[in-house]
Image (cartoon, rainbow, N blue to C red; front, side, top):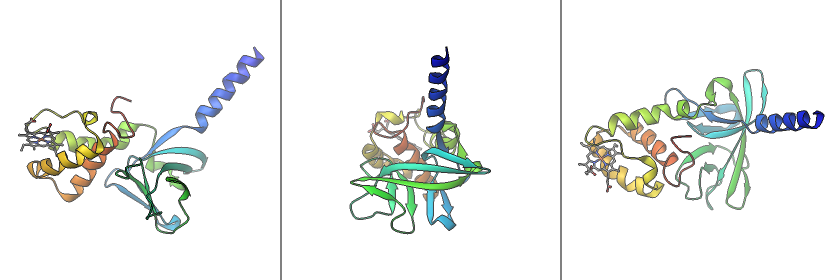
Length: 183
Ligand code: HEC
């Protein structure tokens, strides 16, 4: 029994440590953390390290390009931006992988993935279902979505800002993206 309880506690502890949170911004896609010289992007999945009052220390993992060590992307193809650093050295780099730690106010974090992506998802379902049913996002790769969106954005008559947000949504939930709509 004692063993069972300690295993249970160990499990709860490890789950707690790896709690997946998402950057949540009600309006816009950028969260500048000025005194940390970091900008985080909406919807980005982060791991919680610790909490201190209203602030949460989080870790982001991703990929960096060969020539620009200040941008952290979700996948190797460097299409979905997760964060930018305004100072070199803030993103810890190992090969093509990068990791970044930041302190984020609780109100900019959610454990609800849908909530974190709601704004982009709403735009997609609003702007992209006027002429046909909603196309299934995970049927196309990030690369395909570049081209498909490139021709559809004129039909949808979206603004630049909306384009950026819809494209983030499409890339995140693409076949080779980082999230699944049903998760
Ligand atoms: C003004 C009408 C209109 C709007 C708005 C529109 N589409 Fe389309 N879309 C079409 C037509 C017409 C086709 C071709 C017929 C079809 O596949 O249904 C098409 C086809 C597609 C295809 C399939 C292409 C292929 O080769 O398989 C995708 C994916 C797509 N649209 C995505 C989008 C996205 C994303 C948006 C929002 C940014 C959007 N559409 C907005 C008219 C529109």
